[in-house]
Image (tube, rainbow, N blue to C red):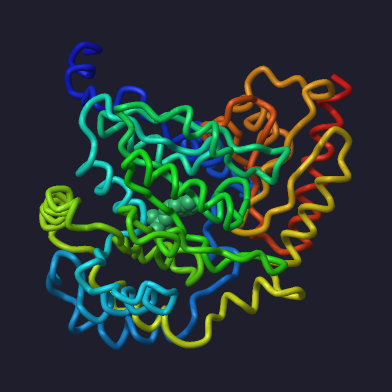
Length: 408
Ligand code: PLP
């Protein structure tokens, strides 16, 4: 039986992890089935927290539903792809063209496709630690080796270009940037981004820039599209509708490719092949892209002072900072905080068990730091999506749990 089961499972899955939806989420589901109400601070899923999509997106999709019954072109419908190209034109990429855009079922599908088309066994990809874990999981799944560069909590969670460069080998194919960052909330300043682009340039790396939180920044933090910093580095920019436009369930995202594409001709052919093989992305959702990218961006109402996301992030930050032995870097962007628990006060041998215990005692679900390929057991991530009132209750619960941990 065991042997058969081993035989059935692909060896490619060995070492592949995606713990943000692993045993902790399963325990939460068991508890919910047993009648407990769980406060879920674990997934950056906006709609269930009352951040509903702009009406225009829903209207556009509904109007187009009759025309969206069949497959579309594999790379996506023209109106959506040209809208994405024009969006990057407006960011300074004046030669962005419809051919530079491929649509996908969320950024998730595109991350996997982009890596599948690129990696041979043993090829290395430089990925931040902590990361959004799909980057590490998909790299491993594709036979590649995730080589983590450590972001510096003492320096706003920015990466250290020198460390990154020291990890480049002759097997390194790509450098991943997640900006604004999940889970740390960091938004990288120009000089850091320029240094990363320069590393990619000097070592012939593909730059993979995950910018899904591009429009979610606070207190004037400026997001810079990495693609705008060079015309000689082959760059793939990832974004989509899940966060800014709050329709994660529609599964809609895109990649925009820039730089010396003629040098990447074979790679692009491979990407087109994979894109053809999946037929096309979800067609109704593609109709929403053009509408989403144009006009006033209603996410702005949430991220300005007085807006829900802004106030919630401040509340969570201030309350967490007041707990003994907890330090937290304020997020300049995205939807998360990644607090640190002082190991002198909270020695945590296993952070996954720690957050499961928090869940059992306080019915509060957060994600453990190692789920993001972080290097110690002293961090956890929470989302800043619940209302201020809910966050106050939740952080009080976390504080009570930590007090009992201190006293134990
Ligand atoms: N990239 C980052 C950094 C994310 O945080 C997420 C989702 O949380 C994704 C990609 C996946 O997004 P999508 O819903 O478009 O698949």
